[in-house]
Amino acid sequence: MPKARGRTSRIRRRKCFKSSPARGVNESCKSEFIDLRKWLKDRNFEDRNLAPAHFPGTGRGLMSTAGLQEGRMIISLPECCLLTTDTVMGSYLGAYITKWKPPPSPLLALCTFLVSEKHAGDRSPWKPYLDILPKSYTCPVCLEPEVVDLLPRPLQVKAEEQRAHVREFFVSSRTFFSSLQPLFAEAVDSIFSYSALLWAWCTVNTRAVYLRRRQQEGLSAEPDTCALAPFLDLLNHSPHAQVEAGFNEETRCYEIRTASRCRRYEEVFICYGPHDNQRLLLEYGFVSIPNPHACVYVSTEILVKYLPSTDKQLNKKISILRDHGFIEDLTFGWDGPSWTLLTALKLLCLEPERFTCWKKILLGEVISDTNEKASLDITRRICCDFIEETSAVLQKIACRKVDCAALLPQLALVEALRTEELQILKASAGILDGLHAAFA
Image (cartoon, rainbow, N blue to C red; front, side):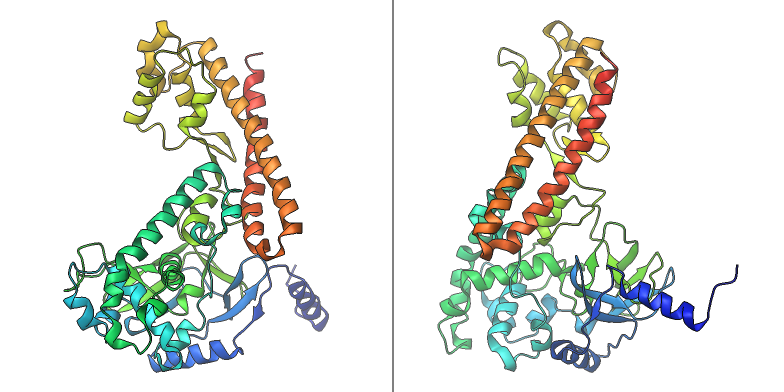
């Protein structure tokens, strides 16, 4: 049947589009985006295919103003628009960085520039870009301690490590900041505070694109791979997005091409990689719902709790798992417990007289029905206990949302993470019940 093109059909399609939950609100008319467009135009960049917009679910992002076909260039941002260590070393900070020993890292150079330019306010040539950057972030290092306590334990550990890392980064940089005093009328301690450096660190960590640079004279030998890309960094992540991204040495532009179609007025996405939600929250401060890569981690410490303490070969078994890389993917996913988790438990459940068969287990062989059933029973118990624990945490979060209004955005983030993990665990429990029935 030919496609309807009459007036009634157009009205019907418009109504359908207006009611679409994915529809964004164009924000091109906002003053900060008008200023950013002018700033980018002065640097020879002008894009009429994308517009800043606010979307339900993902927040601020970029909307397609025209249908994008497969293979179409989404964006081509000139090198002069990128904020890199070249930018820093070519600025007023360059001479101070070059003189400092030991040489500052590329990350410290970028963070120092961001803090300094933000402090400059209207005097900064980067003001149009700085004005659209988030005022705060939701990486675990920025979350309140009572919110961090609601995260899954493996993520709590990484959050604590992240916090310690950023704190050490700040403490070790203070003497370098002091050397910059001649550049400022105010005391540098008030400019380069922990909160200011934390904001800059999160900006680079969550928004930079990968761009390998040659080692800069005056900087340490640490990899120089981060570049901030104004306007381009408004693109949000989707695990389903298919794009090709990278710096084009011929055009001297950072380019992104879509490998799939995108309709007019839809949000345009890129993919940061096949990351689970714990990784996304740790590195970028958000979760992606639904996420096909989402999973629930099980630590070796958890596994040990379900094993008999009388097993004299336990330490040896754990050592074997560690030496052969079988403690990296101990997870529950949408398709049930990972092969690594099941295999690890099969080895850990080996009877003393069958211990010499451990190599066969790592190769995927079945040793005995007894071993299969024992490992499956423990996997089910772990899954059921995780369901109970996650449900209890979600109840705590519901109570906190009533009592702590100021923490609502942070609590909602953890709630989304925990809710999807509960769904994963329930799906895994169903799969495990089916596997267990085979041994009944």
